Length: 393
Ligand SMILES: *Cc1c(COP(=O)(O)O)cnc(C)c1O
Image (cartoon, rainbow, N blue to C red):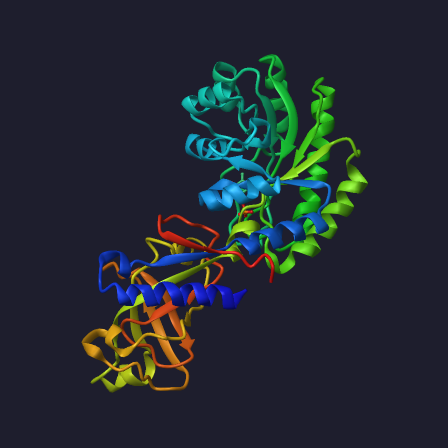
């Protein structure tokens, strides 16, 4: 798989060189491996065969990814009109969409109602009033508080009804003659502890009972996102076991994985646009690594470095570039052996640091390209995306 990605990178870079120096040639770009998405989907189906995934579009709304997931048969978790539109434009049936934002605008509810998206979440009294006014026939999913305190990002503070508030919310929904049909939660992105899922599933079961006592027919449990590669099977085992123990089999269980599907499928390529070698001051030369400046940073594709304290590790794209591609006709010959570098983004902002101290396999020169794997998790920038497909590897 890595070979295929490297080939795509090389072929793009060799074209850039032949075409001279246009602005587009200096842009970072992604390589998306669709085969990796297919493998993650197979892995999901084998570990969680009874849990239907609704991909969280906000994680990475690349239309090619959405189309592939649509073909694979997943549902979609949308949080805005724009996300609803991009999924609906693929001819996805509205029943395959959950509008999983517990705090929606009036216009987005009007839109959802018009296009036939009926499943939506809520977690507070005011939202019930908004829903009553703009989408009174919606099928409501009560989002409850859940949290893995060791997760990469907790959602607990922003969303989720407390255990104390769920009876009041259900009573109010009844009063407004609204239709509650399920419970959802999200333990946080990059969840680590199976116990967070176990606890949340148990709480959800208790809320099912409360809702049934209010006369609601409860049919859906939504166990949210937070799944990551490193412990997916462990979490899946606990989830399956707990579901079997506490939920009757007729309840439909869905989930909202985001990163799980998108993260590992995308590799980002960035160009080194400048370099500062530590010269002159012996105090710096001895302690500070040389500095590389590249064409993408924390205000673009590396937002996670700041927002989620994610550490990234680039590697040098093994250069096939002829020497005339480097500035001043510099030779491609580089000093061999590992080198430490700090890597900075293209803005003049001092915060725009991608990596403080990392080791690369050899000297890096201006005009070189660096590749970063696992960059599909929080795609905010609109960069070009090359596609490869390692499905048959
Ligand atoms: C972001 C989000 C997800 C996806 O989270 P991951 O950690 O990427 O799996 C799922 N559901 C909701 C409601 C979200 O906001």
